[in-house]
Image (cartoon, rainbow, N blue to C red; front, side, top):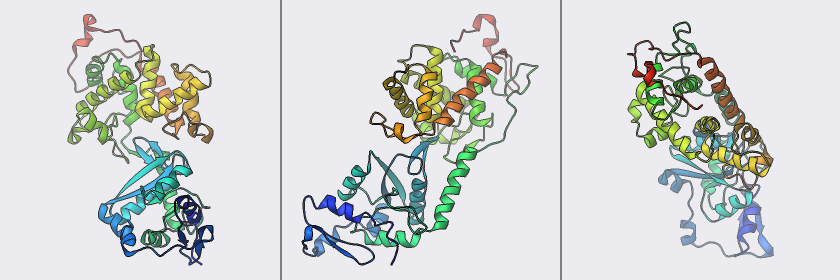
Length: 387
């Protein structure tokens, strides 16, 4: 008997459909299940032609999979989506030469309702025990070609590779870069060769240039050629879609000045997003957290903080629930809209930048290497920063 993992919940799917009409369910291993003890007529040729099986999926150029948020299924990470089942789905789509669309649902009931309504091709969720024979996904019975493909495509080796790939990305952050020293010339008061650019583009948004420098080191260690597996580029690790939004041509994403200028615009935009936080120091902590983990996740953590009696405008309080968004009891809470996140990385990101910024605060605004002196060196051009 072939593996039942992918199809073990055909019966549950059929039960949903039987609320409106009688249907038969035939498993891939040849068993025919008759719902409510009644047979139904064979589908007509016209009805069979309405099925959207593997051939049609490939022609459409898109595989649509349903899942829920979670560390093993799907979650946002550095502007992309990770999760074992997401990575497996991506491998499947890649093998077919088509794109993947992962749709997040609130729960299993929504997944089955949407699959039965024809809104997706499969459920990528371990509804059956994960074994060496199957990822435990659910495929509607009318997609026999897709089901057969999955049985032949899935293997223990493929699962192991997906797990190893994900762990490698999480260990390294997935960023290829040359690591430069956090201080280029401590005695000379030079943090990096880009100090002039940090000063120039931090002034319009009223950030201390040294805070931007500290963030840049956290992002790329001052490597303008830094590239992440997700496509983030340059000194401030800007994602391609963010570059499009900010008006930064993708061909200029590695240009130091254009990258820093775009990052400054993004910081200003995020600061406006958190304009309800009155303290500038606190608001900048939220901005840094959102730059790393996404503003939606931070808003989820703020709401959890409020519900549990904390101060939703104080980063120390909210950081507790950013961390808790990795726990099912919290990322599955009805008030949480954007699900699971790896909160420890975001909390460490803010902490590391603040610690490095403290080290940089003793650095005065001197001319960096390979850059002409800026007017801000003159006392009358100095600006007080609320950070």
